[in-house]
Length: 239
Image 1 (cartoon, rainbow, N blue to C red):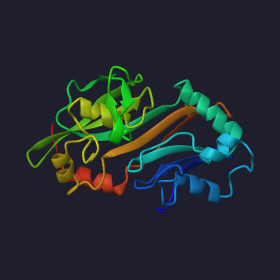
Image 2: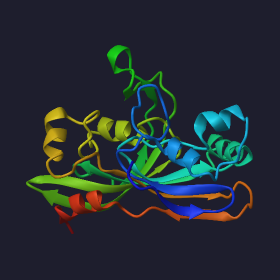
Image 3: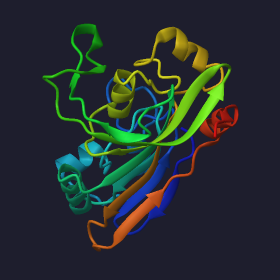
């Protein structure tokens, strides 16, 4: 497994900067070491018989395998329970950076299309559908770029909900797929992206919450990984 970087730690929880390429939770289909394994092997988790805590290894939420950035992990069942309640109440703020195709306009706005799981062979994928669950993504353009005749927008995205693949699904439906997204992007385009960006360009840059035990305001930022930084440096910034 790639090295795990805790960027915040106290008696009750970690925030780690999850590396891309690492799966968060164990599953029968996962053959590699996971973040859950790392947490359990740290010897800092409370010994307990709590089923939910054991099932999750203290992990309070998920990030896609190839998404990097802030991930919350509780060290004991009480902290996990309080974090899960904060997520349910939408009182944990997650801010992402996403590099997408095209010139996103307006420069600031909402994507509010409902999202549901696909059917049949596409059950692992998600899509916008009227029958889906509510999903709200607030975005703002941070920079605009050009590269090899194509335009790109660097977005900050604040998730009001936490649906699986939410940013990737919303961006693709808006005709601005995330760079190098091989699931929701156009196949030929995402394959061309992979020449200069080895994974989808999506990073959980910041997480903000009220600490579940102390009540103090907590904001943690995860530095942009070198691979995404290198991809961004290939682009020409536009005024």
